[in-house]
Length: 213
Image (cartoon, rainbow, N blue to C red; front, side, top):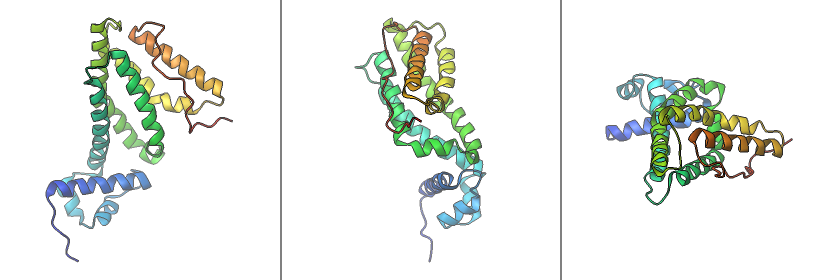
């Protein structure tokens, strides 16, 4: 069968979609360029016309996923009807919902076979998403509800906490331990941002997919 010629940009997107599928199924380390080209139905040469290496297409897969996340957060940041605290609350709740509805992706990104991919994802997410949170902090400072001397640096430290938050929460063995962790996280964020102490950013809800012993 003759392969239908496609617009170069569409072909590039096809490679990225197939790579995303295979990285999800097999892991980044266990997926070869041959696996990708065989599924697309093209030669090695075609792959290397668009990408220098498997690592480069991995970066494109990550960039596509983070672009979607950045778009969603950007809508919240640009909402003129919300104050800074409301924006933080909305993003934290949205992030928890994303974790729940994309649990398979979260688990797959933490697999040993995806270690390189996870490192790249972490680096790129800081680069692409941190500035959006800094915008919210700066808005809160102008509104007088945040008291932060170093917005960018403070958000960098909070980012390290958010990146490991899910693993900590999942290690909870009892409902009480879960709630204590959520309360501690809430207090930590509030103190770091200088928010009035009677404010609560996190809803202390029990995640439906969290099982206790």
